Length: 251
Image 1: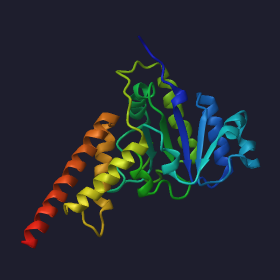
Image 2 (image 1 turned 90 degrees about the vertical axis):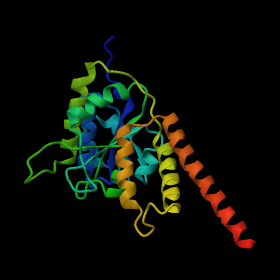
Image 3 (image 1 turned 30 degrees about the vertical axis):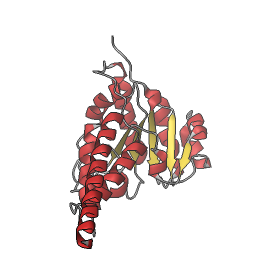
């Protein structure tokens, strides 16, 4: 049985957008391609008059848009978060094109809430913001001028989603929510600091690598519980060893 992509499960997240005209153009692109949920994080108001001027039929998307102060708050209940970037580097390793990303999302959209995050017009997404994303994607373009206009980038991705809406998914999986993953990563960081694996002066560098690695796995709730169980066992072992040393020192 062929199943359509569930576009209703996909949210477009604009992080720190500066120009209401771009927000309006994004709403129009979403309307064209069948997406309806827009989220704005710490940016210009989707209700700005200039946003309405360029929405051209997508005004209802602007009016339903949700606003948050931080990306972490915006994605807390999402199972899959994709960050888009045009820059490379150690902290930025885009490994999915819009086409490849769409193939992944077709099956995942059946049972998961998905967020596609686009950074501000000037800076894009920061490294910290990308570390909150489970997958990283990039729209291919010439190396000498890789950055697309915000609304153009959104319409390219939305077009791929719309075109692939008739693709047959392999299977639908219920992934862990972003909030559950964050609690696991926080627990992981504390435990790895305790055993001396992380540099206490700069733990975030290695943690970003671990976040990318586990983000690619697309963990479900059971897998998150298993990992947290590992950290808990390590914590208990450290506490027992510390108590044993203390008793030995008292003799």
